[in-house]
Amino acid sequence: MYFNPFKTIIWLSIIILLSGCDSRFKAELLLSEYLQDLNRSQLIELEEPAIVMPTALAPARYRQNTLSTFDVSLLDFLSLQRCEIGIVAGRKNSILGRVMLDSQRFLYEVDIIRAIESCPITDSALEKELMAVAQQKRIELPKAFGNAIFNGEESEAFFSLSNGFLPLNYSTAKQQSLLNALTRFVKIGNSLDALPVIPGSVFEQDLKQLMDSEYAGRLLFSLMHVRRYLDQVTSQISLLGEEDCGAPVNYLKQQFEVHYVKQVQPYMGRLSQSAYQVLPLLNELAQLSHLTAEMQAFLTQYDMTASQSEWQRYQMASQRHAKAWSTLLNVCGMGVGGQS
Figure 1 (cartoon, rainbow, N blue to C red):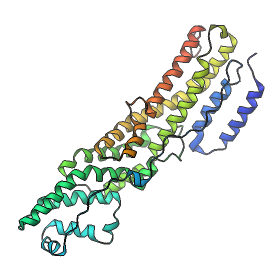
Figure 2: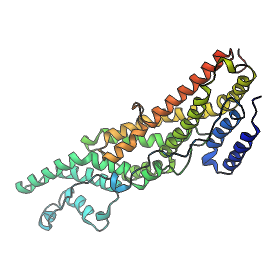
Figure 3: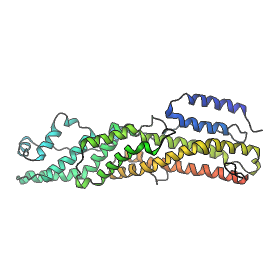
Figure 4: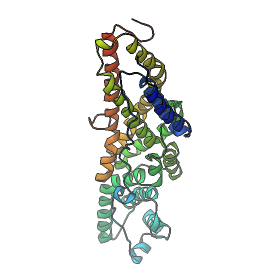
């Protein structure tokens, strides 16, 4: 006997609850059904994983790098009107300039360095002062770049954990605009020393692509929750052995095929395929930026090599899950998909 009607009632209640959720949580319904049907067996006792969230993005004040200010006196400002410095500095000193968004501040920093270094200044004292400013701003440029990418409202939406899972039908074809934006950001980050000419409208539109995609937060949410469901299954399947073979394990094998092989595994494949395109760009972008300690700690969750990153923990959970099933089915002389 391997059917437990009491457990079935409990899990049916969970499934009904989840089925009422919107599309952001359809993946959890898939995972819950996997556990529910395995849980009908008397051989195992599975529980819905406790609700645990990944580390959330730190508040803006902990993500923002402090930048030095550049103030030009009225007399110096008037003497610089014949070159680009006066125009660029005037933009920053305007009422709107004093409340620049981080993205606009980054573009300003690039422009003011270029203007200072290209302006012929006859006053030697003023030239020395301005060149020192340009040198300091060059040092700070990775900070300004990091602020622009990781400190605005765009990054808050990009990394938000409130948007649920990536969709069940997610495909890499849907993320080409995001990839293009990240690629352009990486290109800018790699050429900061050369003071690249950056079209402001394109830069702002690329930031909007991050916001609209909601990708990083949804990926992190998906990886963590899939991992925890797989770990639940692994913890029980790994306890079974040859003495459990026969009809009970055959029932478990059927649920493994119906739910995991045909539904959960393809979804995980789509997650991995998309992550292998996005995460290398995101991690390179982080390396090219000067980030606060809080932002660095947050982004380690996406690190593809760090052993404690959420990505690596997901990969290891997938491997443990596959190994547990493979070991049990081999012991019982069973294959997947009708093989034996």
